[in-house]
Image 1 (cartoon, rainbow, N blue to C red):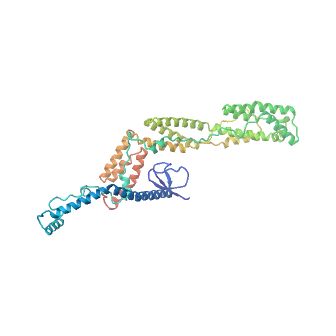
Image 2: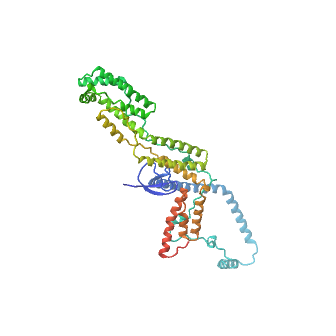
Image 3: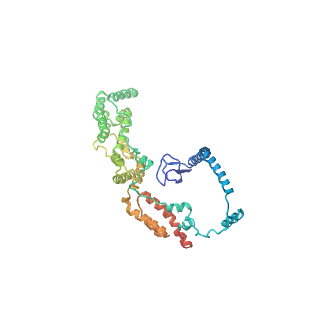
Length: 448
């Protein structure tokens, strides 16, 4: 299995994954910012090339523009310099030129601290804490990184785009039959063709019984399906297969009538199988309706920027998506067929095989759940009041790190369970802090 290198332009995280559409960054869970590592490097190279070209041409242009603007000043300064030189030449001097040169030389050779205190640069005086030597620059950067929750901050353009994006539920619903329902004319035409093909004419009285059964059961079932009465439709189609025994002879009935009616029987069985699936999926379809309604309510709260209520709605939505996983593992529950129907044993066996073969078609809620999680993470950064306890643990972790108390920092950060952004940052810090704890066990304290 080959893996491709990817880069997230949102959080800067690089990772490997299988190549597929809508790949999600494992660090920030964004999908729109994930590009191939090679493409990212090419874009950086092009940007640097453009910048260097602009810089070179900009410097030359700026130089000649500045020279043209300052040209009169250069001329005036030259004239003043000549006048000053003439004035100095003719003015009486207190000392000779040699003495002035020696005096200047002594000034240059005087110690820097003579006559006034030496002022060190601010960076030399300041007590800047050094990062632990046992860590890399990247690891020290992670430890120094702080996640801020601010209810008053403005949303970025990317955050507004993500919050305004709608996700669609990919339903597993199949609300149609394998083929259209037969008409009475089609049924009569099929009977005539089969009699001609087998050279066996059926008695007129028997044909009338078959046509009556078709009208009372089959056509009524088709009407019930159109009205959404699925269980009634399924049962009526089952009853439409209860053909009267031909001439009271079961062997002749099976050998002649059921053979002639095979096209109709097979088509009706396929409809019954589809109906069994629809009936078994009833609870799933109800759950899909609830999920769609909950998502619409959640989206309305986002548009109104009611962040507290939107956070609660996101929690409920994610709980609903979890129910789909439970349903997908359950055995389908299909209602039993009508008990009083007298059907040929071979047709009956086929009907009960359809009961066992019914499988649930569960909706794919993964894309919708991913959308809700991304929106929830943005909402969490706007609700510091909701996570005051977690923020206190986070601050305690930083205080412990300032004192080089690595295990105490781990203990504080491990208590953070939410929000997701704070928890993920804490987990990254804990992995690094555990290295420092192990380093102290191996070779003594690691100072900050």
